[in-house]
Image (cartoon, rainbow, N blue to C red):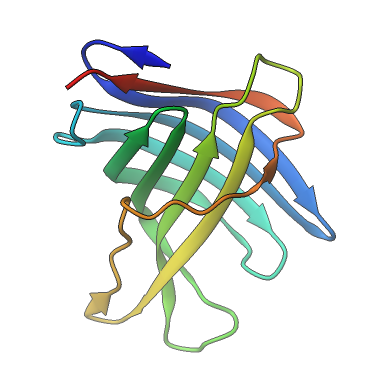
Length: 145
């Protein structure tokens, strides 16, 4: 959706794949070219990469109805599959494909980990598809530069 002013990604979504469940609440905004990104990502994810937390936004990239948002977790979470590593960042990919309640929005997430003293910072310039969100509504707004 085109707009003037700021790019944004707002709302919530849920999806389940096998025994993994993802619940995301996002409130993110930036200038039309991704500058001055601010906001939060609340994530609750179970399955192989289980984590729950709040991340402060570090980047937002919006292109039409698609958005990528990444944030640094306020409290890093130990990686149960790799002793000494912690999940430090979360990233979400969203395609705003419809009106609320129709399961048309597409949602995916990822985690980035690091070792003490360093971490791999995610990029918002890459977009990864996902699966239809089962509940909620995620709204992408693309500002005109």
